Image 1 (cartoon, rainbow, N blue to C red):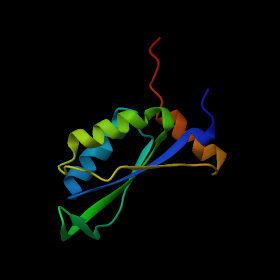
Image 2: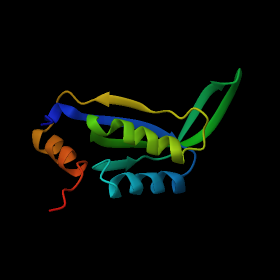
Image 3: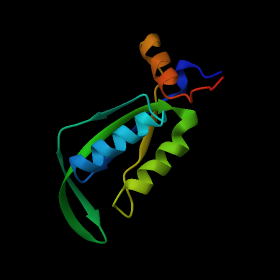
Length: 113
């Protein structure tokens, strides 16, 4: 059985709102994530292929279980236009227990009787 500390916050950025909304909806509909928060556009400055780049990106915060990490990563990679997308997972060690249980319930596969 998963415990509330089995919750992950997975973060990524996408180049536009349409891709961000599409990915967020797909993750929640597939029950791979309980919730995806789409942030306001940010400006990123980074080094890519030995050049300094600047771009506007849409941040996503994906709330899921650690058991779903591989599926989350695969879905991000399959819909992401970047060669090397940002995918960072942070374990949630403490939080409101009822919320953490909600995340686990919302990102668990449904059983068919």
